[in-house]
Image (cartoon, rainbow, N blue to C red; front, top):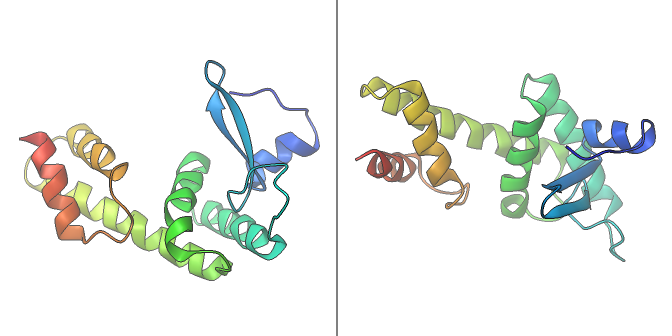
Length: 145
């Protein structure tokens, strides 16, 4: 948790227009919605707006704040600069469904939900969103062997 002023910056962090990464031990970093660092000389207003709108739409669809941020962080580099909010939302939802499908497949094989989720999480941070669901499944399964 990072202390922010009660007004503008606190609200911006929860609305997805200000992204705060890091922790009290290693320090905090601040980014615009599109992932460019605060203070960077070139920030695309259109791209930043698209990420902000996508963040809001995903939250309205029921995704939790932390998961929404993570999904957008993961799909952002894949869809590239100039992506529309609709493209970002679609890419995030496809990625989320792929992760859920693999997690569900592992649970169907008899792994506990917590084990399945842990396996998907361990693989998730090492692959890109373009990975095939079958390959993602195989990699997650190997972590459980």
